[in-house]
Image 1 (cartoon, one colour):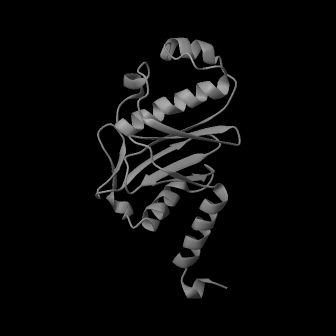
Image 2 (spheres, helix red, strand yellow):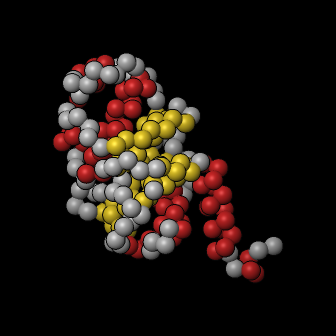
Length: 175
């Protein structure tokens, strides 16, 4: 099972990442990055990936599957020119939404594999990719095998933040 937490970039998302790890019984101090910059957890059966755009933050965590995450805000671009340059063999791209789905698949797969996007860009994506579109942003989770994704909404993520913040306050701080 993979948990995909969504929030706004104005929130303290690095702190949220720590809270999410603790919520899944992972010590935030066990989080580190490998030589390629991929975030890893020094614990068996704990995998994490994150991405952010101007509008959203995505934090994906799994206790069973390696995971890669990406998100992109849908905006007007010349997607046909970019497609011809970076993935000319893809024929199923019909518009901006299809383009951004493909782009996020490529980036999420690179994060899953721990490789540079330029190594994957012209190859066919061979990962299982799961998409979600919210508020003109495309989110993608890539895994090596089919697995359920639990998408945790902004609202639920915010509730988690508030609940944790309340438990961190000492009784004499509460009024």
